[in-house]
Image 1 (cartoon, rainbow, N blue to C red):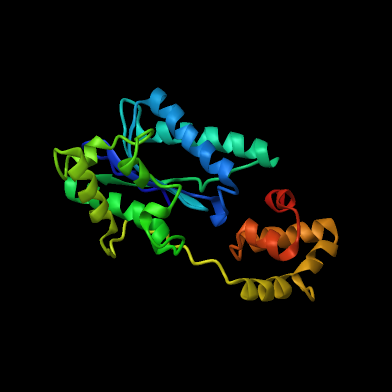
Image 2: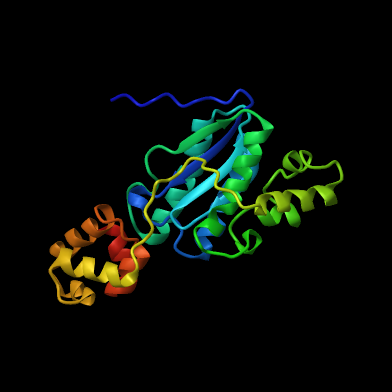
Length: 253
């Protein structure tokens, strides 16, 4: 079946979501988050896009941006290609990191722009990672309350008030409002709790304990690791924690 053509925005603004292949984590430590933000900043200068919001989650990324002269597909190839090259070098792996086609939806009016802005900033809250959106380190919400280093904050702030100080207060209040809005839903299932994941590993790998996976023949072990990642969608971090197997081995399985 042919892919559906990507919808274009008349004003060049898009809400974008890209996630790890097989739902695997794309950020393993703080340095990974920092590197991705550096990549966004680097190609912002090259590609000429504007960023209005971002949120980096464990296995996916949300962006709200406006393209310049470069088409969206070229922008995303630059960003993804650069980060994947670095990530593969760091973790000594090969192959894809992101799902092959990023999701995007066009933003055509101020109302839906603000809906996407709020949705992106509420991602960590809805995932149960924080109790307040401004507590999350890897979203752009702090760029609206402090100095903007990556985000073009004036575009959104002017929708609330011409006075920047008043606009910031209004924007933060808006983003904290309880909302059930759905934008580019990932349809991902929550990670299994550890006790359930342990039972799954024991059943799938036919071992008495999760740590026994280390004792299996290398080829057999790697086949099971691949199955746990791709078919049962356990995260690399969870497999490492429960089995004691090195992260690099799990990544390359």
